[in-house]
Length: 194
Image 1 (cartoon, rainbow, N blue to C red):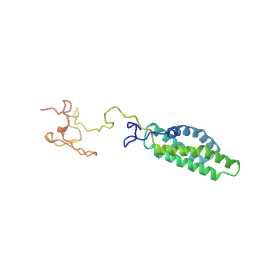
Image 2: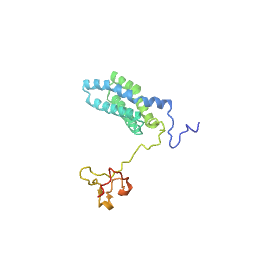
Image 3: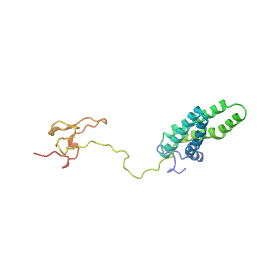
Image 4: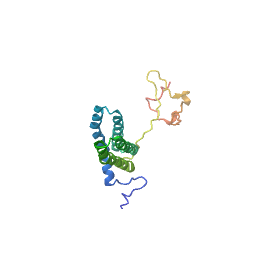
């Protein structure tokens, strides 16, 4: 294996063909559930509508999180797999003997359980790795309070207390203590000298 493509602590394993297919399934499966939900609602099957709505939510959320390459897609995919297995078990367990049982078995074996297996593959593989950024800038910027002068009154901003010679900044949630000398003084932010 090429060392540049070898998985390491900061580099996830590449997805296999089954995982790549499984990552693409939650979105179309969620869309396919919408007409079925309409049929169930028209028939007055309230409990099945609730269960299939939960499946739709889990699949759609998984699709969105996979699109954002979020690690939490693993959790929603695992939840969708559990819901799909419960749906298959409930369909087969509550079906009347005969045609209803046969259709429930076909639905479970051909749709619900394979989709649950695909969701488990997504939960195992996770989101595809994001391409490394070429920018060296940190994505998070901390906002520090700036020393300012109110234009009309000439008084300092409310986070500065004390006299002009020993101004101090109140403690902020991040635990930052700074004095006025640590901030750049500009003509706009310095008080007028008398």
